[in-house]
Amino acid sequence: MITVTDRAAKKIHQVIDRRGRGIGIRLGVKTTGCSGLAYVLEYVDIPESTDQCIECLGCQIFVDLKSCVYLKGLEIDYVRNGLNEGFEFLNPNSKGECGCGESFRI
Image (tube, rainbow, N blue to C red):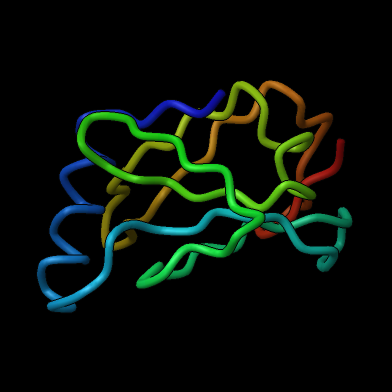
């Protein structure tokens, strides 16, 4: 359902190790922004009973059931462009993004 590139997996391991606790990250979608939807990332110490766990390259990605429909086929990458760096979400379901790139639509 969701794949993680080597760069993204390395970064996920780094941030969890630096934090000193946690078993993975939770990826979700919330309604917001110009285009309607935005990705949400947070640390997971204890999974929710409704989370689906996806393991990829040693990373545990937890997804709430409501977000699964929006994230099917998603690839998570970690990119650096000049002074900016961060996770990039390559979503085959996305029909477009807002100009600032903070939100998307399905």
